[in-house]
Length: 279
Image (cartoon, rainbow, N blue to C red; front, side):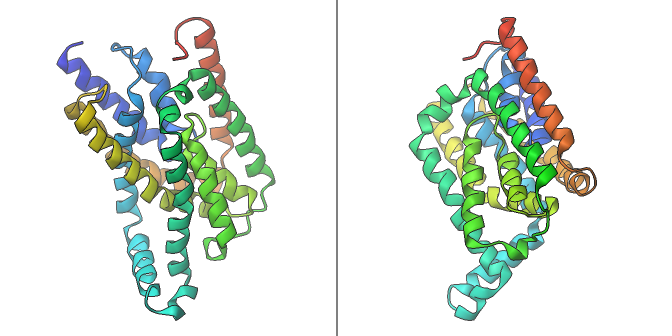
């Protein structure tokens, strides 16, 4: 493949990453599915996915910068001022830390499977459909009464466990946490906002870890194209955040449910036809 084609492919994958990272449709599944259909015909790999997520998480840092600074300052004050520990922002900071533990622990324990066997497209397609049905049920039947000020320690841990399920391509990090939030009675907007905030430590940590590893061991995608993809993911991701938060407040998550089911079925069809290979 020519150098120009490599750059074009990376730019396209960065666009896909930016479009899908914050939607409950699994960005890792999209990169896993689309990669083999491009001229290079290869899986871009878990490292490329994690590194480009640095771009989309940078968009989160920019969009929620005021919330993040307020939460950090309240959390920092709570370290030395016991009275501050009852502050909602300080509690949010602690809950984000606690909620990040499951994905870090499970990510390290099952690193080889995450980068290998769990990228099987039959698993990806199944997860797309199964979690579409769960998200649909949660969106229809969730009470949607709780706000983030009512976030409890138990719910913070459950959010974290739901986020950890996104280590399997097809589940969706935002989809898992949003579904958990709806099932626990949080509003659509609250579930989405907490999903964005909770992802920051885990995704940035994973991205920089994979970036360090790629310097040592290499990656299926060269450093230059990967950097371009990350930059594009940042710009596109920022726009998606703005639109997504407005969309879910008026239309809910059912469009994403239908999309996930359709994509999962399409992947099964392409696997059966031999257009895609499971591995």
